[in-house]
Amino acid sequence: MTATSPDDEKSVLLDIRGLVIEARSEDTWAPIVKGVDVTLHREEVLGLIGESGAGKSTIGLAALGFARDGCRISGGDISFDGIALRELSEGRMGRLRGARIAYVAQSAAASFNPARRIDDQVCETAVQHGIMSRPEARKRARRLYATLRLPDPDSFGRRFPHQVSGGQLQRAMVAMALVCGPDLIVFDEPTTALDVTTQIEVLAAIKDAIRAERAAALYITHDLAVVGQIADRIKVLLQGEEVEEGETEQILYHPKEDYTRKLVKVRSVSKPGHTDMSDTPAIEARHVTAAYGKGLKVLDDVSVSVAKGATTAIVGESGSGKSTLARAMTGLLPPLSGGCHLNGVELPPQLKHRSKDQLRRLQMIYQMPDVAVNPRQLIDEIIGRPLTFYFGTTGRKRRDRVAELLELVELSPDLAKRPPAALSGGQKQRICIARALAAEPDVVICDEVTSALDQVVADGVLKLLLRLQEEFQTSYVFITHDLATVRAIADDVAVMYLGQVVEHGAKDDILNNPQHDYTKKLLSSVPRMEMGWLDRVLAERAKGREAIS
Image 1 (cartoon, rainbow, N blue to C red):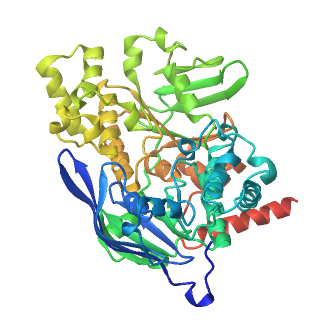
Image 2 (image 1 turned 180 degrees about the vertical axis):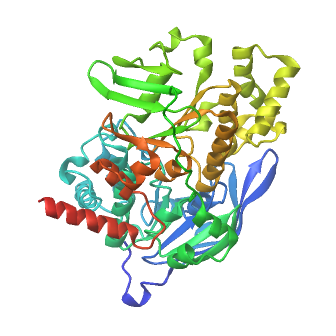
Image 3 (image 1 turned 90 degrees about the vertical axis):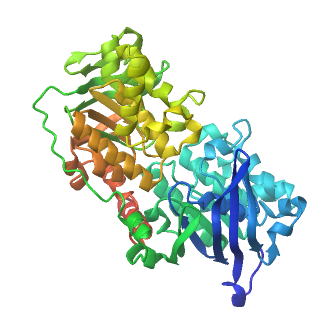
């Protein structure tokens, strides 16, 4: 890192003025970032927050002098440490990227080469830029692994990416960004894809590393509670324009603009729990044990039930067995023992042995709408297929029903003739909901259906699901790692850990009076809209470890 004297420690490192970035649509260019200013001082963290399409990641990439394919920087000035980035040749720009300006992407799993060891990839940039030799880079990497709280720092880098957890790989990506000692790091949603117990560890490691390395950072996220734990200032964006900027405390506690107040309040509503288990459950897993292959047991004697017209949330960290339970319920993974019952009737273990009516009554909505719909089909085909398959509906009657379903999920019927690529993430998830509802199911399994969406869009999807449940008395199995989602939509909660249900009961009982240690840890890991929350939680856990030792 470039040395700075005490006099200029707070001097401006990144100065962006009047930034305009355009995206190409067919033969025209339309602005997606509209004259935004960004000022970042040395050793300062600026949070960029807003919903999808706000321009957060686009601005973050512009700080590296970069625009995605199909985009162009068409206006404004970008100055890094007094260097005008837009005037640099690609060769000079390449010498800055990685060495003095680094980038941490959202998905480490998609960013690492699975065929190369972690050390080789972490050290590569430092060696290629000639900043240090490979042995020196490995030595620095080991120090960074320790700072980032990775296990066994001396040998961690010898592993391949698939041999470590998602949270560990995300921290390894932070080490990769830090190894050259950059002045500026752009963090692009680095904890969004992680469960809350892993997220808190990664967030704390990032915060420690920024302090230790005395780096400045742009921290991009859609979660105010997360950025509130790490940022000095926060800039709120909407549709490519600045809404508000201020010190973190002011944004969290005294937001000035209506949109910022909406971000602060979003998903604070809690659905009253009312589950009545006197009737036959809509769906029930009874003592289900399941495994992948011969030796990898993933579910161990799991029992979960969902009342008619109610929602049971299945919560737990990655690898706890939540999605595997969904696969057992849908017949995609036949249990080794135990079974699943729909409206009191035992379901055949394998999907291929279930009747068309059983298939119709149990539908599923997936986490990633981008990969859950066929990109080559138009929306009317995607929603219309279950209508034809289950009910034989064709022609004008099918087109009319597709239009009704689109209106039901609060979308315009005009979207029927568009491909999925023409829709936003939130719109595509609503298409997936409409497709599930086309079958007129009794039970819908929702597998992390809001985790890929920003908070404002996710809030809209949750409200839609609640309205549809009230209207049609549909039962939901809601798989999630987000406790804010649980409060908003669930009646019952089942907490899973290492393939077992460790607690199962009414939402208010589980959330307000948890009994199992893992449930207590899970609840304490949910970021709160409070200054200093992260430091307090980590201090409390450290005291607990000291007391045990």
